[in-house]
Image 1 (spheres, helix red, strand yellow):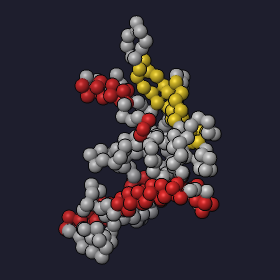
Image 2 (cartoon, one colour):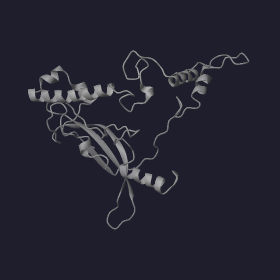
Image 3 (spheres, rainbow, N blue to C red):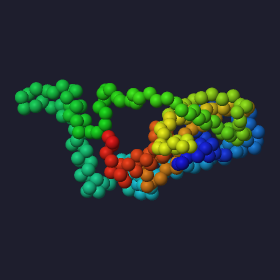
Image 4 (cartoon, rainbow, N blue to C red):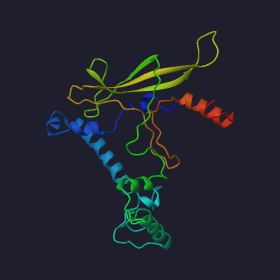
Length: 251
């Protein structure tokens, strides 16, 4: 499997937004000196990571050139706004595409405001603003329910167990292929309800379990996480049918 329980139950978890919203001066007063130092170490590691991400630019990372700020130079520093000929032509083309087209036509009539917006987004991909969306219409039975709970407090780093109070904060459904029992053949489709819990630590903090997520990689254009409807084996089976067997999506 792509992810294991260690992916979202690390011994030294980083602080999430949910954790930071609970930390205040009153909570820090309840921690011992060792617990406060451990919390400071995790916060410092997160701060360094955030600063490194803020300092990324097309010159020192895989960020596209379009992500560079208008006032930043080619090396990421401020104060240089010089453009190359290709950048100038691209900027001019963007300006032409975004120029207002509400001018009167040849007959002297001014088009309505909605018509201009429709012409602008006519060639763009994706759902139109205001259009009715599509969602999953099939209702499948839940075969297995699997809870995920934090094993360590993100504040005081104390271990947590089932004896502590817990509550669900999120859940997702996962479709996966499984092998049948003894004497049976073929593959079975199983739907699992993955429930993510949060537990109350004696220090007062409520750490929570989150879906597993891989670190960012420049070779991948999509984020790798557990938050998907199809499981790893089902995705591999679909890829084998479409790429190796050359079957159509409908089949």
